[in-house]
Length: 626
Image 1 (spheres, rainbow, N blue to C red):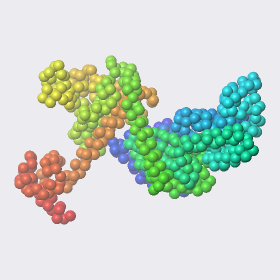
Image 2: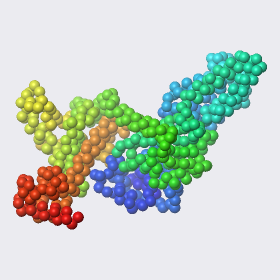
Image 3: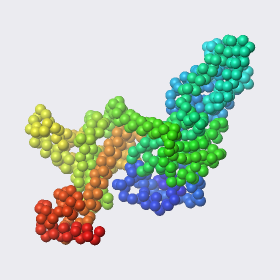
Image 4: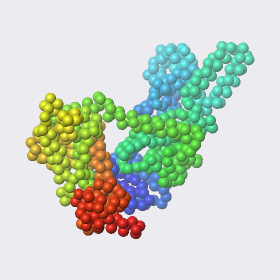
């Protein structure tokens, strides 16, 4: 077990690893290749501490306890979403109440759900109140009708047993509520058989009105049961979990199946603290979610168990056996953690997976596609950065390299808060190990805006500015941004602004977005601008920066792959990196270059007869030796 602490000694991340050396090496690699949130975490951390435990079960428990104790900012928290409605039964009151509830769990209250919508709870309640006429009114309404001695409308239409006016005793009312809880908990067959028996007895004794009422009650119960889809005929007790994710975020969906019926559904979308695959997401989610459920059950004295008999997941984590053992300890009996392979369980797992993908897609589109949110973000940026107008066109520059080699840059374009991928640009830069990212940023800004000035000077048709008269398409660099964002802090922003001033461009605002604390830096300002963490403006800047980083990383990987491809030519006399690249570009691959003759190789510009012979000999020798 290990903890990262920042400069103020606050715990910012906790984790577990079998090999601490291997795990820390993955964190302290080149920053450019790290996941964005991992890079932010590593640069924020000032020290690391570790604790040795004897078993993986102990590690799971300690990790969960540390997350609860320290609330680290870079650990994902699968907190219960307080917007999910549940059906609450206030068993701690003399006259228990049934009602829709959102919020933290309380002791002495029994909860059923969560439900996707509050109307689903009210619809179910409306059906069941004719069978279980329990109190649903607030304490104020209950006291008022007790004082006036008359029941409310529900009491008159037999959807409440009216304990407020003494129609039933406290014990009789509690018995009604307990039957209601048993029905929702899945013990439905006994209730149906009991009503059928009572209906038959009433019919035999010629109490036809009572028999008809019991018949209607049975119909209400069956309609309520139909609303809970039967997915397994064997009374399965399981949770089905599925994920959808990308490099930065993940969505999780859980279907709660009790007694073979889907009793509830919930989901979360979280920021990933580091690069994680599905198995690692499963490990993290299961430990946190069921640890929380066990604590809630203990705090509220809930009669239900915190963990089902089965937890069906898309992939098993590396410590699946330890995780299953820990879950069994929380439940008090054996729990299976497994992947559904076939049949109904496999079909339900695929349904949950589709729900997770749909929720993730909606989350991505909700803010990016919401015109109101985009407009708010642009207006906030104008106000917070002191701009003359809203930045309808935003460009962002990001640099990617490994220790100064294969230096590349990306330039992404957002218009009206939406990516305009057709105008993305990428730049190959000279090696900048000594000069660093500041010089690279300056070079990209100079090249981008030099092209802009050149194209505007050569503009032939003033009625169609920015349009190439020959093709009718927009020129590549014809339009300047309202706001230029650079990935970095004050030095990077100042370098970009200096280049613009040198070129005589005064109508482009420049900011730097630092990954460390998501601070916004203005050129030459000693202090950053701190945007609210929940502001739409900050979300937009982060999205622009992350898109630039993604685009730069992709180009860097392509370029590095090409460089590695020509490594077979290393050591050939008179052949430098430029000629190697020219050869691969001319022939398309090392394989085709190997098949070429000396004369064909010599036709490549810059490659003479002697060099061609050396290349041909080196490739043929390598082929024979292999």
